[in-house]
Image (cartoon, rainbow, N blue to C red; front, side, top):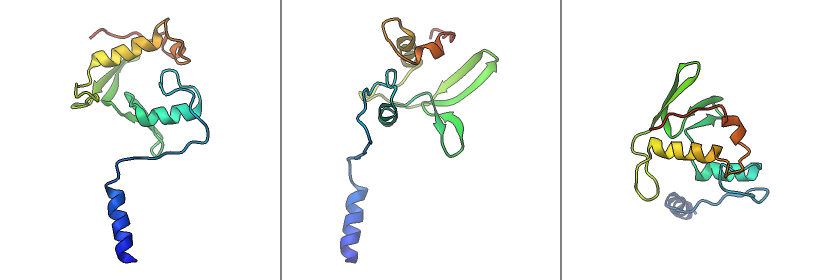
Length: 125
């Protein structure tokens, strides 16, 4: 029995598939469009943001941003983590972040989150 348990444990350490269950089907997987809780939960497993909410410390912490800080009342600086790669091996850049922001506020995209960013100005990189 001990041997079986050790075999089972060793197999689970090398597993390459994660199975998750959700109570409802997600309506969308794109985090810019995801409004229901199931979509948001699954999108959080698939995508990273600049920051995220740490449920344990109840604080906003960096995710793709290594550091973030206010310079003044209107200027927030994000310093991106080093060595973050896309699936094709290319590095994450500030241009990628700007692209996502511009997509979010685009008139061509109907995102429920656009209104929250309408007064945010970005600096071209």
